[in-house]
Length: 492
Image 1 (spheres, rainbow, N blue to C red):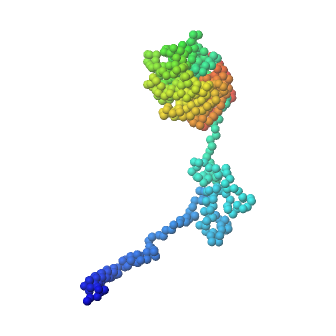
Image 2 (image 1 turned 180 degrees about the horizontal axis):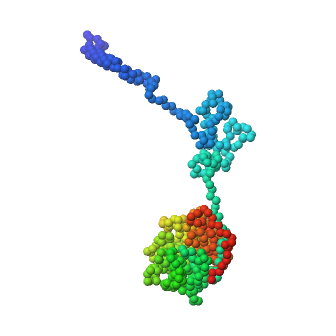
Image 3 (image 1 turned 90 degrees about the vertical axis):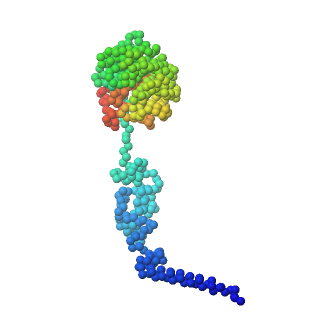
């Protein structure tokens, strides 16, 4: 009987033969690889991969130790430490260039400034300072390209950004003209300055022209005892002057020959506001309407704009002649386009009559407006986005506004109760100058064609000329006007 613990010989013999065959095949494969040097080297690399160093590949570490001999220490106003400076270092440093003292000096000066004492000096009474103390010598501009206090031109820690001094504006008028019968009426516009440097002034029933180059005075017209001058307005080009009358008429005069070209009707009451746009003339009246007149057409007016509920006292076309702004005694500011008979924009924030209107020559769609005695505010509008930008309470009645063509500044004239003239810088609305001299409210304002001089008129029957803006060529130089030029003349 067979032993059950013994495996049958017929099952074990095939396994032994198979194992022997695999060993022989594997041995033959190793023997075939053994003669090749590259194969044995590859095996050695796999076995001793941690100890193998490639002769063609550099060794990289996780630390970068810079060579300070090539560092640009002059950029930070730091010189390399000398041998004497490194003498106090530890014996292990050996005065080498890679000792930590140079890096410590660089880091200390970059963070705390070049005047910060070394750590070893903090204990001495003469050099003891608080490193967190504010130091004006290390104050830097936020826009400086050198953030660590050295700009390569000035001393260490001192910014060379030049601070522009405020422009000086003369506080006295350089010329005063007597203007008898200049009405003290908030709703009239009796002064305008032409592109040919001629000033037109409405005095009672007459219009006078004053040539700023020759100081010659010319009487343009006399409307008679039954009429009066309520507004004057020069065309942007040429010598045509529009005159609005108390009878509701608008007359066009050629100032070069003192001849009336035509008279246009349409309003029932006085015409206190005029505004030119190329050959188009807009007139605003106490009858609450605005008439658009084309002086090339035979008709007295081509369209009528209705919207105001009280007298129209302010009119201004934008510089691109696309928008007309109107202000009225109804405390409303309206904006019209070239083809509308109803206002496209309505602003009702003012709480008094809106006579002062000015378009910015620097930014398209920027409009400024001023309110009367109960309002006293200058407001800024963006007519492109139909938004209210800002408001400035001036403290007194705003009678007129004009924007400088040379710089981003504007002038406002005031009535109750300051009777002053203020030059503003936009958009900060900081005051550059406050001019006084008129004893009545400053109701009239015009600017010279070169954009440097303004003329103001008041119920004290005087016209005063002020140099407030720089010239267009040199905006940083102040116009010097000698005291000897101050004079007083009568327009008549």
